[in-house]
Image (cartoon, rainbow, N blue to C red):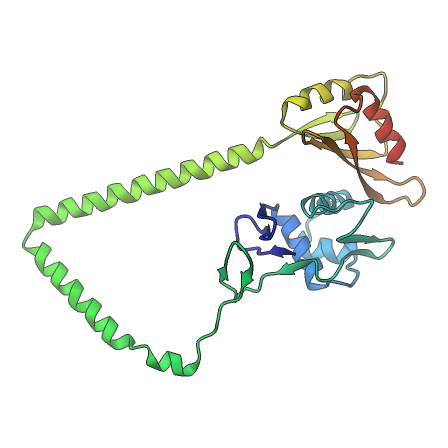
Length: 274
């Protein structure tokens, strides 16, 4: 079971498999909209007006987001086990496969999602807030009285606090900058014959790109985007193309053995994505 928590840094999680993935803002909004209407078709127009809010974008942006969501969920445009394409209707997410974490839920564990418990009125009455506030005020008065008589210590404490806050902010910014830099370098994009070729940054990418830049075999004009990634055993390919028969943008995902000849890959994509 996948869980979607839009408020977390890694919004998509599968605690049973120990998998946590970060989504783009638009991809996260699209997935949230599909979950809220699970089992029902959501038209492309409704998705684009809800997510992009009047901004002028092409349908290929939506198609690319759906392809990326399928990849994140272990789905593909061919199998459509999680997100289905309904011709002339839009997209639909199958029920009970991805759950949206409610905003009221604040407790999670590494094994399962647990919603937070609401306090009963009797529990609220038992909390002695006035006495806690009085105690805190007394402590603050004692703290101020002590440091009023020790100005040097007061200045030293203030300086220490300022330095500590500055160091914490600097460390936080460094971690944030490093994380964003690493994430941006995960994929590289190259335009070849008006087609965007996206490759995972690994040693194999430069070799694959060299074959794609070879002009002996041209990428078909109807293909707008190609995504290529790999693991030690397989190659993963995904293409976004305009169908000759339907006249609309479609996606196709397929896998190849790791030893598949790179010089034949472009021809295979042209044959499959038509």
